[in-house]
Image (cartoon, rainbow, N blue to C red; front, side, top):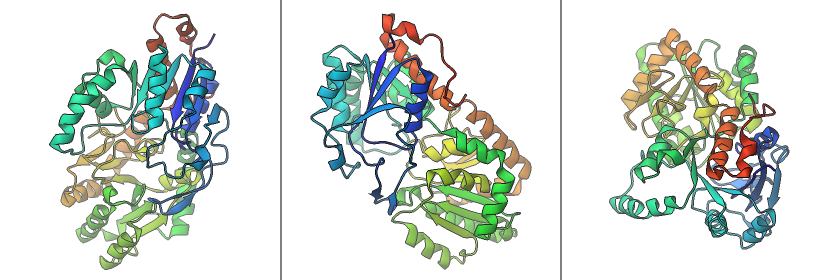
Length: 414
């Protein structure tokens, strides 16, 4: 009999649902997902994007799932989600393993308590790292509390280097860490990369960007922490280097900083060199990546942004601040190989990295090729295999683990 795994999560998330589908198609476990909110499955207002969000229609296809009673009453996923019906639903499914996302939501804590009370295994996922600054009080509190909390977890599905450093810092043994890259639904991205020339030409004509321009791209919510204004300031300095026609900036995203950014561009005389696209739907994003030359990520704090993983599959080199959590020797951004990393806030260093990649076509191509090679190590197949490996390990030598030995090749993007 296949091991049964319950995933307990706040709401349908557009890059995790294809992962649940791939796990189901893989066939080595029986997966059921328990959602605490319908946000994402139904249109909702995202206050950070400042727009109504509607994910793709097939978001929930291909995997077993249930919305807990009362889930349609939850309007704010930024606030802790609890559900008094969860224990009953878990008991009816009776999973061997329960997977939770962090400890912020009461939903996750309730699922962990349910599992431990019945001697079921718990897998834990987060993108936490030690890069961003925290107060001394908070650091001390975490060091006192987290080791005890983590001791009750059977296995940790880790994103990559900095995430693993975080767990080791809080005394989690290496044999409880299982690499499981955040899933990227790479199919559309690979199609876009294969048709890059045609897509690039068409989108650039529509946006009025010259075919010869070297275009930097920023993807994400336009909030203060994304520091998109740093890129605007860097672009202004790049224009003084004598090759101003070559440097352009494409911004795919919306949010509270949009008007301020537009005003900053106007004030710097950059309206003709910056294109702010607003919110871009998931199915349209691959074309945006394919039309650009460099991904730029100047955030002050970004644990493990999805865009750095997506950029790999269309062969983009990356310029990122050192506060981005996806930097590491075996992560999305590998300094000197497919990316250039600069100290956050140092606009001259951002300008230097961006200018270097823009002006050196051979370096840009080489780093882009390395991005594709790294993408091959972080496919949906790797995410599925990492998850199944963790399930097998926490179940140990039990009868349920015996079915996990031979992987299936079905539906995982291999």
